[in-house]
Length: 391
Image (cartoon, rainbow, N blue to C red; front, side, top):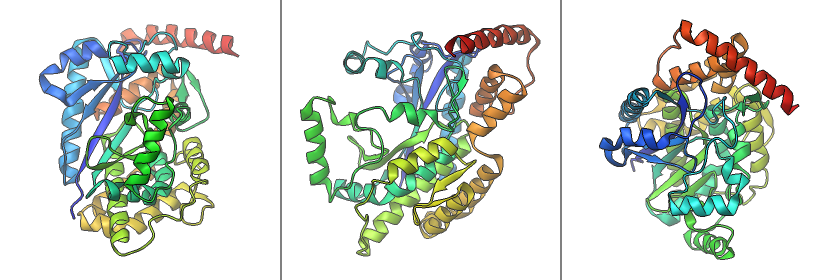
């Protein structure tokens, strides 16, 4: 069975000169409305989401994502804006980005969850992979869950929150996991048990609909797919393609093992929240929890072990050579979080935003334009005063 894949990417909308997050998603969406439903809004008015087509090859997915990003970038530039694919935007302030309350569902969420909704200034990358049916999706969900912290580490791109270094590679994970249904999924025997649990959660009144099941991986509520949700938005398209290929391989591997009569899950997911925290804290620059031994091991060792396990599934889809190359390049470059920290250390936070914009565009960051040097100095001074006040 060829497992097809599709990707949803979320992008921060920023002011091109100041580098700050701005609530102008509506203006950007108007500029791209000729592309139909490729682009949509999200809960914060500073986020735009793109939806790829359905693909069987990584080359097709790569072309789709780069084309979509180029369209969004051109539209943003026409509005004096830029877009950034990263878990968080380095320069943001609470209270300056309202929720998209024109949407009745988002208005309900804002009213019910208050500060939690206000602070969702985060972006993720979601990958859908085909499954034969909903029952297979639920069973495969349990089997792939132990490997998801590895994918989170590969995506980690959000060390900064409200202008300060959090010490985490993915602070987005810490913000996101405060939702009542976020985090690693539980263990379910099949779709009937899963759907019963979802109905109970909706019936409790804590969430309003099945779309608010925010597990790190979940059966899609409207597509015959298993949806990966654990990852930060990724500045480089290559990282998105790598993660999409690995998710497909995890799903294909789980389905094959299930067909062979192997147990898909040992029923013990209690350790997964700790493993997810470890990946969010360290990214690729420290230890991860090895999904096999459940002991700490250097991130490159765990990533390469994951590739070895998935090699048959990767080869079956023609992805092995590309994935091995992309993974080694990613390990050599380091996580997006670490590269962002390096850019900030060389110059300042605005330089970090410049790098994220360039990476999102797929280009090398240009030299600082003369007219921005004075602005950069002003913003750096302001952020320094703000940080001092926060302490």
